[in-house]
Length: 119
Image (cartoon, rainbow, N blue to C red; front, side, top):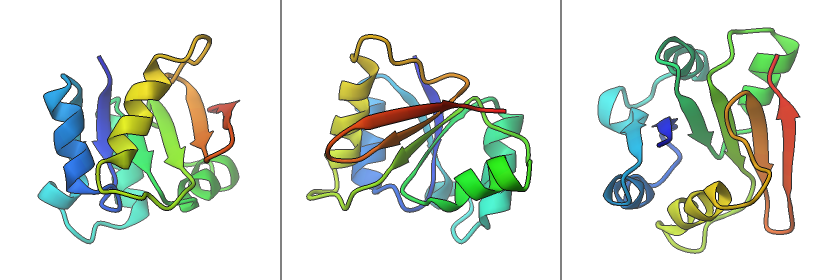
């Protein structure tokens, strides 16, 4: 099971869909609307969660500013066509052979999936 923290830019419809599918997802929008990226990253790291986001700033915080890494990062780099699309993409990602989310910064766009080890 994926224990994750959804950044506030992840639609709540996707959060609900992931929960209904059995994933443990905490939505920052339900807890601390307007939280700064550094606070979100810190929370994900402290609570050993995979961070789900559409925000590219987390790569900068982790790799250049050397802030603590969460269990993993799923960075969605596309504009969702529906509020549920993020959940559909994440559920499909888990089924891809060879994909490991823990310890990885995973970038998903419409054409490919890229992964980089977290520091």
